[in-house]
Image (cartoon, rainbow, N blue to C red; front, side, top):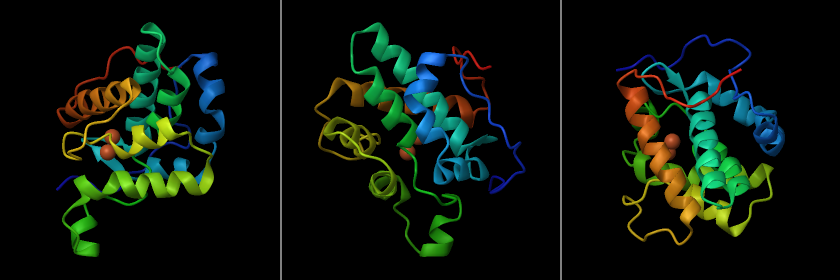
Length: 167
Ligand SMILES: [Fe+2]
Ligand SMILES: [Fe+2]
């Protein structure tokens, strides 16, 4: 089993991109979102680092293709806001369906703190598609779920995620 907790620095690296940071600033400063840096997501990457990578790469892709980059950035940052250590999920809760249930948990937690558009809700809720069976309707959802899978693979195999432009 992977380490379930690691001491991470107070400051997590963020992309050196003022326009992106202006869009997600309120989310990055939220205490629940900050707490994601105490949970390992894949390999040695925290849940917050993973979410920032997915958010930023999705933002850039959406900008490039004329899609809703703001929705991708914000929902990408919130897509894994389930707020527990998933490595311990089944032993603590008895639940073995983290892969299926965590998008709903993330959405519930995100809605408690932030106003989300219909599209942003779909991005979070469908980010595990095709596990979530019914396909997403918005192209931004496909962008985020693609980057989520690509980042997850790289993090699992401890490969650097390219094009993050970290400060
Ligand atoms: Fe996820
Ligand atoms: Fe994810």
